[in-house]
Length: 322
Image (cartoon, rainbow, N blue to C red; front, side, top):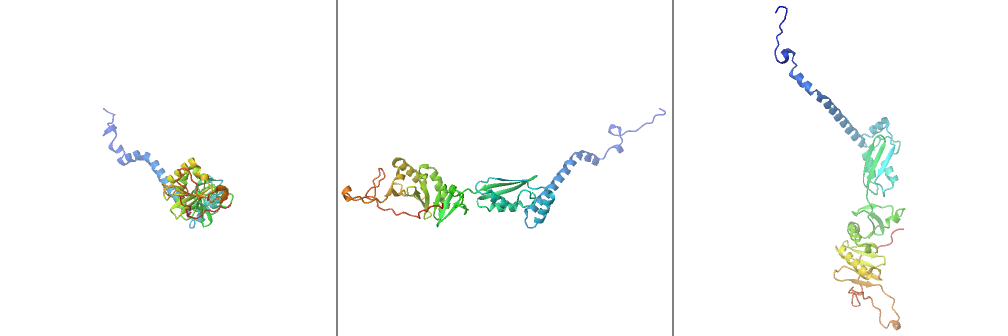
């Protein structure tokens, strides 16, 4: 028809091949939604790397101390609060002194690692952690070494923990001496390493434990118990649990722990040997018979034919410091 131009079309939708976008452009458009998350990831990785670098710098005492001080000065973040958790035995003043930070100091101006090491050296501290918490808090968490017993050795008294390690040299004559006096007293070489097993065995027999004032390690292999009455209980090597159960039964039936005895020998499982305290010789006209070294106790198997002397072993405990 005249006046009408024909337009040749090619391909889908009537557009020419020159009008279609390239495959690369189509791919870029489809991946556009992933560009922003990728950039954000790169930024976060860079920030994390910088933070690790700064943290390493803050932990190094010698190389980066000036950098830490400058960063603390320009940050404008002072320490507002210091929190100490898990403290019972260690005085708080000594923890704060070892921390080396006070309120108003720059929050970023000290070494966490060095502070932790100083606190770890305190007498009652087994492990410590130190944290900064923005905007102005320093948090100290303590795991303390709990005193388990008092060890007397060569006239000296020290506190030990359950593992037999010395907890502290101080405190035995101070304000905590009365509290420490309630702990079990163990005496002699090798006593700390074996104390936990003995104390656990005594805990199963509260009647016996209430009468025990000290435990003496004999030859680093067995125990003698010193009672409130002054008598010694000779325990067998490695058989403390059954021996203490036997002693508790004797106490229930015979009130043995209150009797005037020098020692109670439980080293033989099938025999009980008792040594009586010497008694003043009675007037011959009154008694008509010579005194006996031993008293016959019902069911004890001990009488006048028993040995008149059982040599005590180990060293006797002395009084704790007041």
